[in-house]
Image (cartoon, rainbow, N blue to C red):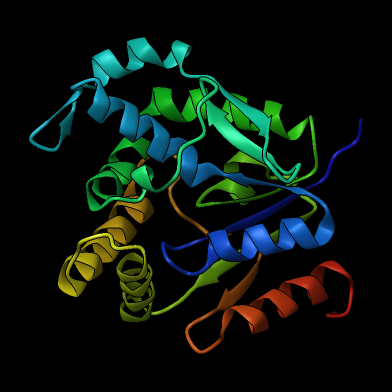
Amino acid sequence: MTTTVIAIDGYASTGKSTLSKQLAQHLGYTYMDTGYMFRAIGHFALQHNLVDKGVIDVAELEKALPGLQFSWKEGKEGQRQMAMNDSVYGEELRTSEISNLVSMVATIPAVRTHLLRQQRNLSKATSVVMDGRDIGTVVFPNAAHKFFLNAEPEIRAKRRYAEMQAKGIPASFEEVLANVIERDRMDSTRTIAPLAKAEDAIEIDTSTMDVKAVFQLLCDHIEGRVL
């Protein structure tokens, strides 16, 4: 079976997840949320007392990795959903505590190796739209289409803060902005698979664009309406 991969990389809160979901639905592909995978592992670490004062017990987490398996499950409307050990997670992965762990989890070599294998295996079952930070550079350097999204930190923090407020997740704007800036720093400077634009990726600054406009631009590029 031949499948297609579309990679959407970029900074936190640039709309990657929202746009990737819309694009997958539009194309009849499956959305693969790599951030969900890292968040799920962070959640596992918290639930199993592998985090002490913000520090992850890397050795114990590495021992647990073989038992953390991701797969596709069919949702209520027939769409594929990602599950870890047969469990599909939701808003419990979107707390500030988990957000503060994500970049640390992503710096652990064993975690990245474990997830890289699974991401490639999952893409063999269906064409996917994947969002993350190193999809076009590391995970799928031969992706059919590559995009890189950016926006000013303050604008990204406002978007994330509004999203959290709407969902009733407690946080201050200052806390959200600090988290965005710190994640940018950690993601861009980590030794393994740092956040970077692939040479052949199309960069889009979403600072002054709404979701509808960015989505249309993505479709235009994929469908050959932009040279």
